[in-house]
Amino acid sequence: MPSARGTRSRSKAASIRRPRDACRSSYGRSCCGGASRTLRALEDAALDGAAVTAGRRLARAGAVGAMTVRPGRVTAVVREPGGAAHRADVLVPELSGREWERFLGVAVEQAGHLAALLDRELPPHLIEDAAVSGIELLPGLGDLEPACDCGAWDHCGHTAALCHQMARVLDEDPFLLLLLRGREREVFLAELQGRGTAPRAEPAAPGAEPEGVDAAEAWAAGDILPPLPELPGLPQAPGTAPSLDAGTAAPQVDPVALGHLAGRTAVEAYRLLAEILRGDMRNPTGATAAQDAVRLACGEPAHAVAERLADGSGRGREGLAAAVRAWQAGGAVGLAVLDEEWPVEGAALARARVALGSAWEAEEEPPFRWSGNRWTVPDEGVQLRLAPDGRWWPYRHKGGRWIPAGGPDHDPAVALAVARRGTEGTAGNAP
Image (cartoon, rainbow, N blue to C red; front, side, top):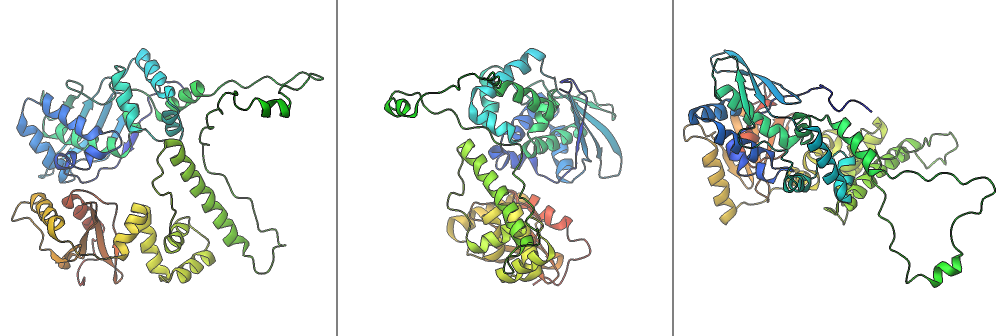
């Protein structure tokens, strides 16, 4: 087993965000709520409120470079608007060995926690249960110690910007929280698996009577037998489909297409099993035939299979590629946002106008052209699409069609920034 005190680090690319507003919306709905807790700790600890405000502006402007996360420390280069760059560090206390032991104990107490962790997911209730047991994984007051080469002895705009970016990254990849507190993900999972796996029974000696009871006796005692054991844990990965191209298939059977279908079926079965073990069946009725064609195309099918899916779906090659991007960004909801346009009226329209009005200063708001649930900036070739759940989807105009530029966000300014990043050299002449 690798050392639990390894000093491996992970780097995360920066992304544009309005952390304070997001803290009040999508951050609060994240899998561990790390953003709201981290930003609250920053605001409570910083002596200078102006530094917090400056940090928020720098983070929103994309001034934070790629971050390096390692046990007890997050590091990034923060570049000011004038071009000056500063190395900023935020130090966070690591958990002690005894605290990690207690956290592992909390993790294996519930089968749902264990199944989710072995599926490489950090369940939100585990963070809460650990806090009840006295293990605070999320940073609190006094946990964010700044260090910056600009010479500031307290939090400055550079370390505050790093805190804002760190908050977003913790929401996107909660396992980085474990690394920040002193445990690499694979080390933690290895320790967890060692605790959660029961020892195997020794094989029977040659000639020994097999264990068990007579079937008739078991049937007669059915009403007094103990309950069935817990379901087995989730496998490490979906199963692999066997090779079907043996040269003896029937003429009407396409081995390549059948193999792709079997592989995607294994992936879908794995996803459904993971949801069952978590008690979270979000899509119990399955996808429609039109949605399923897009889902199958997500698995990088062979050229001939991709052509059949493009023709069968009625989308064509480019249309199916756009649909795949939408599906990967948001499943059935993302596909509906791509394909459908609906009116935004009444209270929904009022909320949309408030969100747009608060996203920019009056003189900074882009010249949107509004139609249905779509707000377009024609001269830039970018567009925002509003979903029924209040999230904004970034789109950009390319090759004569609107294509998804990324996943949704509750903040329209963030969504528009994502759309703009992918339109350099392609803007203009958008319908």
